[in-house]
Image 1 (cartoon, rainbow, N blue to C red):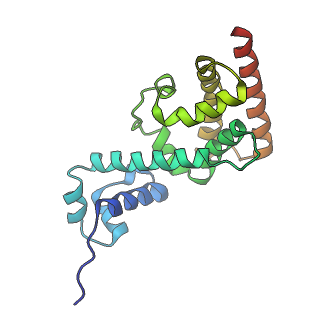
Image 2: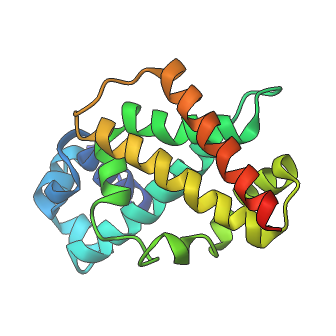
Image 3: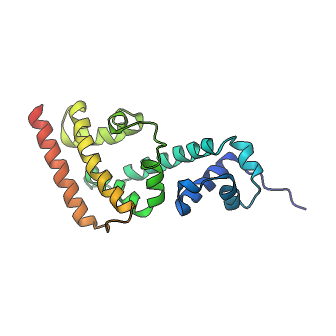
Length: 188
């Protein structure tokens, strides 16, 4: 008889993400995750003493995937527009994971104003600052404006209340960006 496959914490996190992707984060539990892995619930509870700790680990991984997705922009494309479109495109391609990230209450930051100071956002802010030619403080103000706009679009799309029209959304993002940069530059 071959030895049993050892179920690792990483495998469990991957399975929890797949459950969230297919059925929503609300359905992450020992039974659904073990079913995804075709094993008993024992390995799940061995590695994660609570389902809450498993959800937090899965959330952290999805957050990393989302960050990588956002900054993976094609060469030659305006980085700000590309990042905004990627943010919205993630909601189109992964609506359940988008909801897990932004509508579940698992975010470490309590609000957008706290998020703007997070380490994970440094590459995005640096690209925006270079593009806009503003101080970092004004760049953060522009980011909040553009992020609120992009998040609104993404949330509406992720909740099936709007079709994704990339050309139209790109136009709106560009107008929002230009207006926010112009206003910030006048204030500086």
